[in-house]
Image 1 (spheres, rainbow, N blue to C red):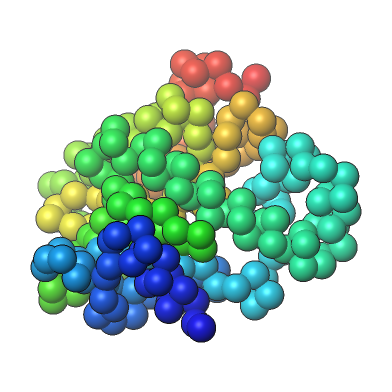
Image 2 (spheres, rainbow, N blue to C red):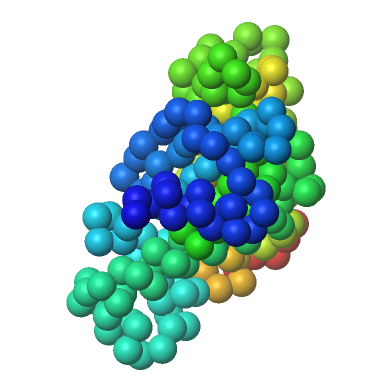
Length: 240
């Protein structure tokens, strides 16, 4: 049984049957499908992580070491260091649960984050950003009218602050994982996000998020990036 078939079966068991329409995106970690509800015409995005045996795990450990690996049992930490199947499965499960948790925590607080519809064992059924003609483009692939720059930048910095207010740093925020839809940004991809209570990398990753967001508008001079980052760190008393 394929990963897609397993996900469809699980959703049917959860009384939320869907039918695949087309593959939307295929990356190193996961594949995303556009699916349609069997009980109506609604479209959703079904994100399914690849089997852990076929994924690369070099970068994930860097994001997870502080909280999840550092706090894991000794045998799990050894397995992760060795790179065996037990360690890879642990990281795989953590990525899935992490994204589900952050979507559930944040989507209800902002219109600029896709809503989680149903969690599944190896992925998430979530709000689809787009229409029957196609998905919303990434911000990196469109040229936003300059008259919307300030409003859009403000929304994204406010989102970074919302994350921080909830004890989260996205950690990989940029125009490549922000969709542009109906003249508004939609932030996606949360598996690499960190919990500020447990990580020592908060200042570094927060600064990177701020810089990457402002880079789109060519406002990423060091003074501006540093000022915004320091104000946020001070306001929420993290990374000190």
